[in-house]
Amino acid sequence: MARMAFFKGEGLPPGMQRVGAGGEIDLHAKKEFEKHVGRALATNPDCLVIDLTEATFIDSTGVSVLVSALRRIRANGGRVELVCTNPNVLRVFEIAGLERLFPIHDSLDELLAVVAAPA
Amino acid sequence: VTSATVQRLDRRLRLVAEPSGLRTARDFAEDAASEIGFTGDECFQVKLATSEAVANAIEHGAPCEDGRIGLRVTGERGALVLFVCDGGTFTAPLADAGELSERGRGLAFIAVLMDEVELRPGDAGTVVRMAKRRAA
Image 1 (cartoon, chains in turn green, blue):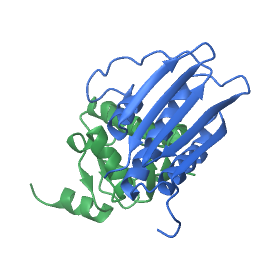
Image 2 (spheres, rainbow over the protein chains, first blue to last red):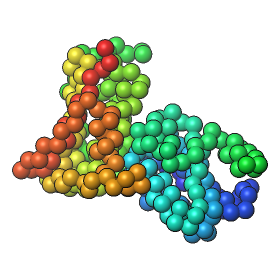
Image 3 (cartoon, each protein chain N blue to C red):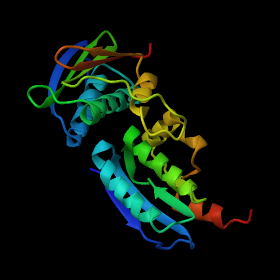
Image 4 (cartoon, rainbow over the protein chains, first blue to last red):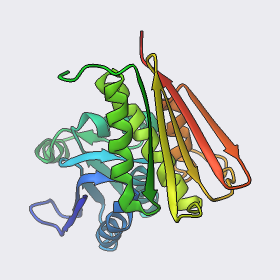
């Protein structure tokens, strides 16, 4: 079973939102995943972090939710960043060519350090 | 590996034609791949391909007459063949309209993961046949 949550602004810099998606992110989890991403996007963030730290599986419908989020946020000049270390999930990202579309971080702390670093 | 590799297997499963059945489909495929001696990576590829084919049948196809989706796996001499049968008429998804396209990705995944994939339209529905050989 998948586990989803929208952590509204919790512990994040202004303009950043985080959605956590754990477990198996497949067609069964798609609606729930879309719902949480939709709630996060409704706040018009500059950056949406989709945190897949606890994800163990993702299929093409899960990938579609990520790509859809990117398409929607780009229309407002925003960006999506991913947190993921699970090898099976990263393997699917590789197959789908997602490394070209999304920055992928090992942890939320690493992501926040990158964001806070001077350009 | 704790269990001995089996030389032959032939198993069938009638799966509930709902997204909640996907995990059962994945376990069914992964177990069979493991039992005929596929590596962990190969088992994952078979598992993902099966999940994509079944999800496709659930989302875009129709159940068989008994309200279910049929799965069959056969294994022999290091090769695995999976059949996913539904009662729908398969129509090819729209061509991929670029990297931000959200359609047709499942079949593209299967093509990368398996050695062979074939769609067989029939009178009673559609059969997706997918085959993969164990690395020598």
